[in-house]
Image (cartoon, rainbow, N blue to C red):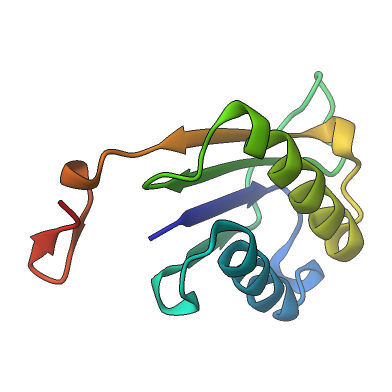
Length: 115
């Protein structure tokens, strides 16, 4: 049930649909979770500043039940920064990613939780 949220000050017209598809495939492969459980939310047209500048920037979060730890997060960071830069041309020094390891009992789905 990984959730990747990407917020950016770029306009919707600058975000290709393929980005969501590629993020889903990447997260499924790297986290070892079926694509049917991956949620990607891309939020465009945000009023955002990074380092006091409104140049293209992004804030992201990756949440998952398991698979989030300091060693793996370094690997995920590299892959996610590369993919975002490939499609949105946002420099890696103008984006943060926050990683959250979620407890299965705190995630609801399909009338239940994952615990």
